[in-house]
Amino acid sequence: MARKSFWKRITIWRYLFLLACFIVVVGNPFTNYYWDINFIQGWFQSLGVGNLWVVSPLEGLESILTAKAFYMPSLVGMVVPVTLAFLMGRVFCSWMCPIEFLSLLTDKILGLIPKWGTKLKYRPDLIRLPKRLLWFALITELMLTMIIGYPLFVWWSPPGLVGRETMFYVFYKHITVEIAIVVVVLLLNLPTRRLFCRYLCPLGATLALIGKWRQLVIRYDASKCVGCKVCDTRCPMGIKPSVGESQSVYCWNCAECVDACPTNALQFTWRDRGIIKVPSVSTKEV
Amino acid sequence: MEKKRATEERRKFLKVTLGAFLSGALTSSCDLSRLKNPKTMVKSPIGPNILRPPGAVPEEHFAQKCIRCGRCGEVCPYHCIKYFDVKDGGVFSGTPYVNVMEKPCYLCMKCVYVCPTGSLVPCAKEDVRMGVAVINRQICVTWQQDKTGLMCKTCFSVCPFSGVAIKIDHDFRPYIVEEYCTGCGICAYSCIADTWYENNGKKAITIMPIKWKKIKEIKLEDIKKS
Image (cartoon, rainbow over all chains, first blue to last red; front, top):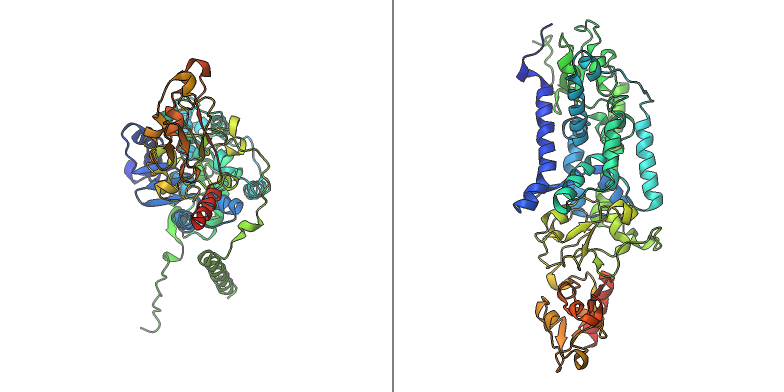
């Protein structure tokens, strides 16, 4: 039952990766403003690293839907995130999103409180909504966008706003009222962990939809499971890996359950052993 | 068996979708721009001296194309690109603008090359049409030289297309050649007419926003005529 050694925990790498992404997004206004280094520009609506352009799929889609025209660099920019989501599912949400970083930080800080720390860190959900609300959020967002005729998620996207408010603060020395959206999203974490990410985030819905047939999944091995249900309490998305829900579309591959599992019943695996399936040699012929 | 059939169907569906998407995107036959409703539901905050950055598509499509990624403002070496917030922009919140009275555009053309959505289209320096400068001859100290006794020539000397976009006549009075004016706003920014005591701090030059494509058409027609 011993926990995995520190560097073998996947979540440690996830925290480090989240931190690195957060530093990139929050740090690049500083490099742009104070040192005029334009190697990295933008934030998660569109990130330019050198000549690599990344355009967020939902924002790009909204831009296409409202402008009713294709623009090749924008389409090409969507290739990287769409491929990533297609192969690995919602890894943007769990491994890169600055909102997830801030939520995780609040969780960890709550965990430092003596006595109730662990209870608060893995608090049970006070508000439970149907999971399919996620799809309705995406549909509502797209319909509103098309009715109004202007893309909406481009300005209220919480991960984008983290970058934008930092940029506003660095460049123009003031922040705008939109910071309230980020604060509200973080406050929604308190009754239920990742309430916004679970039920309301249209970008998460887009990525989940693309990652429906993802290759990287968490496999549940029922023969190894001892039924301790630790994974259910640890899962920030409120799904139950202990009944095999880890391969569902709502899982975001954050590896919390993989590390929590005392018997290694939950493991990352490439579905169909990766893209190329190795033909099995039957022993009868030999 | 059932699973295999499902897989095949899925693959077929994916292939058809991908094919349709690619053919649509590549031939660019999806020119739906003519179907666009010209009426917008909200009023644009763009106005005199509040302009879009260089190379911007016409204002009625700008907020639809722009994904508010802020890359134009981050590469701008003069930090002259600013962003609307929700209070004064509404749905235009997060879109870039240049207030030429605070800081004009110096036409370094860095921003147009980082725009991922084609809201700012890469173009040559002289093809930029952010707006057009309009000289108020009642305020310009050189036009009122009988009264002021001044011959300032500031706008003429700061214009990046000096002698082409701004010309001066035999009395050093400036006038704008509209088809060559890029609307960068350097002349409006550096106009000294506001220091003349009768003008109450008004500048003689205002940059009026125009439709980027329209001025190009005008220019072509003029070339054909001449």
